[in-house]
Structure formats: C-alpha cells, structure tokens
Amino acid sequence: KTAKDFCVQVPVGTIVRHRVNSGQFTSEGRRIWLPQFRYQFLRSDDTYVVANGGIGGVGPQSFRKGDGRKGTPGERVKLELELRLLNDCSFVGMPNAGKTSLLAALSRAHTRIGPEEYSTTRPHVGVISFRDRVEIRLCDLPGLKHGAHADKDMGRRILRHTYRSRVLAFVVDVARGERPETDVLEEVEMLRKEACSYDPLNHEKPWLVVGTKCDSLHRDALFHLDSLYFRLRARHGREVPVVGTSARFGLGLTRLVQTIRSLLYPDQLEQVHRVQAAMLDDRLPGVLHERFTGELPSLGP
Image (cartoon, rainbow, N blue to C red):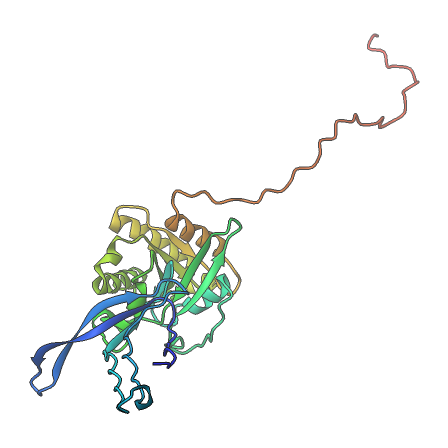
C-alpha cells in the first residue's frame, strides 16, 4: 500500500517485449514463449510501467469485528529487453580493420585499441559536433566474419545495432601488400551482404567505404584504394563514396566527416567559417627614388 515503486534504469535505445505463453511445448516438454513488442526508450526521460502492484491490505484494528482484509497480489510478467544503440552512422568491418582507431581520431570516445583480433568487445558511440550545432553519432561495432547474419552468439548481436543507423560505413584495411590473401572488393561485398541479410532495410540505406592505414605506402595502400573505387563504380554503375584515411596522422578525416554529413543531410548546407578580409588600403605609394635632374639622352645623330 505504501511501498515505493521499484524502478529499473535502462539505457536509451532499449526495446521492451513481453514473453507470452503460446500454449505449445517443445519435444522436451518445455513451454514455448513468444515475444510481443510493448515499448522502446528513445529519450532519456521516458518511463514505462511494466507491472502494476496490488491493492494494499487493511489491518484488523480498522474494523469493529477485528478482522482485517488481505491485500491483492500484483502483476507478474516475463520481460525480454534488447538494446539497440541510437546512432547515425555505424562502422562495419572485419577485425583489425581500424574502426576503433578511426572513432578515437574523429571523436572523444577513447577505448582500448589492441593489435589482436576482437579487441573491441562491445559497441562504442562517439559524437561529432559541428559549428552549426549539428551532431552526428558514430558507432564502432566489433569485428564481423563471414556468416555473421546467421550467428546468434555474436554476429546477430553485433548487427542489431545497425537497426537505427541511417548510414553504413564499411571500413576495410587497404594496406595489403603486393599479393594480398583476400581481395578488398570481395571483403566490401561480403560485409554489405551480411548487413543486408540480417536486416533487408539496410539495403535501402546510403553507404560508403572507408579505407584505413593509407599512410602505409610501402604496402601499396593507395593502389588498392584507387582500384577499389573504380571497381565499385564499374560493378554498381554509380559513384560509391570511397574515402582513404589514416587515423595515425589524421589524413582524410575532414573529407570523411563531410562525406558522412552529406549522406545524412543531403539538402542541408554546411556553414563554413570564412577568414575576415583585411581593410583595403587606398593610399598611393610614396616616391621610390629621388627626382632625376640630369640630361636626357639624345636619340639623334
């Protein structure tokens, strides 16, 4: 009756589903519960009542006969919570492609950057703020492998964060040397196929390709980057944005941010800070030499 509400705080982007009994059983005799969508938290101050408490009882001293009234039990529900992070652009790529280093170079999100595979164990979100108060959220996803859309243990848990993304950025390592083991174009097509196989809505989203480690000129990074651009244009029949970057030296980061913004807001102009011109000096220059007082040379004989 007078107990306080029990509140559970969840991050923004959480989806609440009720597990409803379907009335069917598995071969082992277990019940089959089906999830039903109830609510999703899209703002920081959202609240949702999952279950209502029962009516409180009345003590025996409140009645003349001395008998009390028992309280009614509250509701009991089975919940299923799923987190899908709010972001504008997701970095999708293979392990050790340079996604975390790229996010750390673009924003203030600093996480552990390791040389081993799968050093990023969970998604991280960084924010880019522009001069005209436009903010873009970038999401660094853990590495993907072939068949990730069917992998329930890790692949689908990673790809579910692309549900709210409006732009997909496929990050590939273009520093592969003269004889690479895998082709850059086939890696990009594999990543896009995995994202579209998990969610067909990803096929309609704009996308771009980000080439990392372009400072490794001794490993033919620029050759693979140029080859990727022309091969993508020949395969898809249109201009696919391909941006070469280097998170170590900050190369191509400005162009990458401008490309992502143009894909997110194609009809919005970006404000450019212009340098104020100096005042015009209309004063005549002074005499550079003294007046000539000698005789002029004669042109005659």
